[in-house]
Length: 235
Image (cartoon, one colour):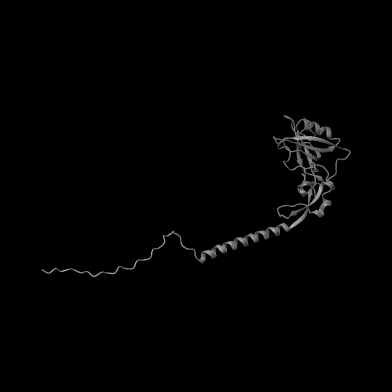
């Protein structure tokens, strides 16, 4: 008996694909990304240069102004030794006195207490000489609301209004029994003003003619004085 042998021709295996390296999950940065970083660095450098130029320009825009060379108490006359010249970056929000106006400062009195190193301004100064030989100084302690707050300064003209005592009606002469009229007022000039205490009270020293000194002192001791600032003239 014949034996039949089956023959299957061999088939060539397909070529193997080369192994790929494992993926890292990132894309290779191309030239565009490099150019973006370079542009950013250039922009930062340019902005820094512009900022430096602006600061340098502002630092160069300076003027000579007057500053306080040493502490000056309130009411004291300003001397040449109290004034010095400093360089100041001009600021439209401030109004210091320029160095060439020194003569307008020396000889005036300090309207507020001046601290060394601060700049002089017009509001800190007041025109006027000291007391005359025929004037007296009276200290008046006024409670909150009995004098303009932060408005009084040396040289101001004020009216020391005499307030009626409890149960007393105000009269033109300050004497009881007369018809009610305008309250009595004594003309005075402020020489100094203290800082308000915790309750808001402050002491205002005023100069008055010798004839009015005792009467004003008596009323001030009885807490019967309120101060009214008169309009300021041109300084």
